[in-house]
Length: 375
Image: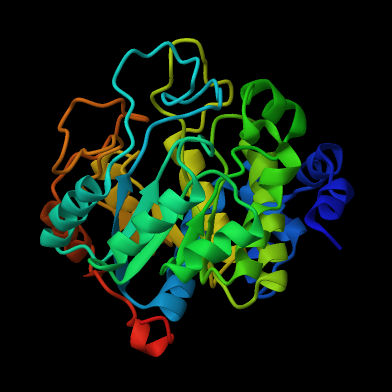
């Protein structure tokens, strides 16, 4: 069964009906159950579960420590291009965003300088990012960037446009470890309304991308929805169903979930479904109880105090000292167009100190390629 079949079997109306059936007794039963079903996740995400956040937090902490210990992986993004042929109305990179700031694709020597700057700060895991410009920034260019980054880091992942399986294999051949790709929203009509141009407008092609990456041999698959585009209680249930599908069909790949929340958006777009801090806490807790073995990533989109408070609630990886523009670490300073403003501007050691203060250990390298045969 494809994931599209699963989505068809769980339309919005059916998920709304699940929420309508939630009672305090169902929330309590979901808390007690070990092998939780989608009905249990709906109970834990429902408004009825708000008084139960404390016991949810205790269970989320227990499960996270059981599977991951007291560790938080550290990573940083490297934007290698801000060229974009897509028109995603919520994004600063969009081709019709109206921005006049400089668009560039980093050259190999510039990528090396970015890598060297982050390696000097202690990072050993990075995420390479581009805009949605497959004709201008071809898979071959991204593969070369992966190879350069592998000279500096043990873990190299990408967050780029969706690829064919053969292109994911090309990246793996150059040392790629992970692929992060957000569906943004699983609601087809909302997806159509906010993605107006480019390959990204193809909903089905993007929907199947992580599965193609898994078949190509990508070891880590990262997923998420862009919180604020659509009703978060519905989108998160679809996200959870997708996660379970990937765990079943891409069982050789480790799965992680990110929680990107729309904060600063272009003037032409208004966030229609605001996700409050309490909502995000509930999302993290409920998903941890539903996906106990998945990594949970938290970026610098969130404010420092809020990030620190989320550390013991299920988070397993955090970015630090991030730049969302090409050349933001060592090459071009403030010259280029950034994708979005960050909220947590602390330097790397400040974030690491906050992790230690919470009773956790910041981890810069969590495996060696000698153990995977990829060295």
